[in-house]
Image (cartoon, rainbow, N blue to C red):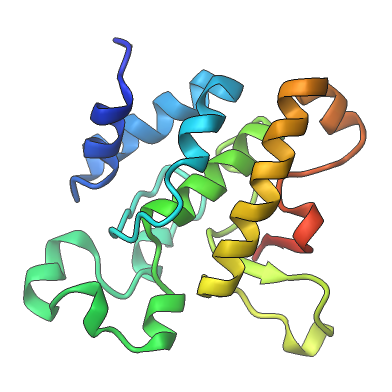
Length: 171
C-alpha cells in the first residue's frame, strides 16, 4: 500500500465512506507502533467513523447514525447523551486501534465500547462516555510514552495494555 500522510489518514477516517475508512484503519494497524503518536493526536475528533473491520460483525449497526443517514437525522450535537455514548467516533476508533496494535490483532475484542472495570459488575456497561474517552486517552498517552522507551514486546510481557492505568477495557 502507498504511504499515507496524516492529512490523508484523517480525511479517510472522517470521509463517511467505508472503503476509505477501512483503508485508513488497515494502514494504521499495519504501521504498528509508528502509528501511535498520530492515533493519540485524534483525541477530540468527534466525527462518526463506522467500519466492520474491527471484528465485531454488527459494529456498523451499533452506531445510532451510520454515515449514509447523517443527512436524514442531523448532526451529532442533536443526539441524546445515551445516543452519543452508543456512537463510534474517530477518537473511539483511535483508542481501539491503539489497543489493537498492543494485542496484535484488529479483532482482539468484541466491540468498540469502553467499560470501566473498576465498577461493580452490575454497574458495568459498554459506553463511549466522554469521561471514559478522556480517561482512555490519558492512559494511552502514558502507555505510548512507555512503549517508546521499553518497547511493545516488554509491555505485552508485562500484560500492560494501553487502557490499564485507568481501569478501562473494551466491552
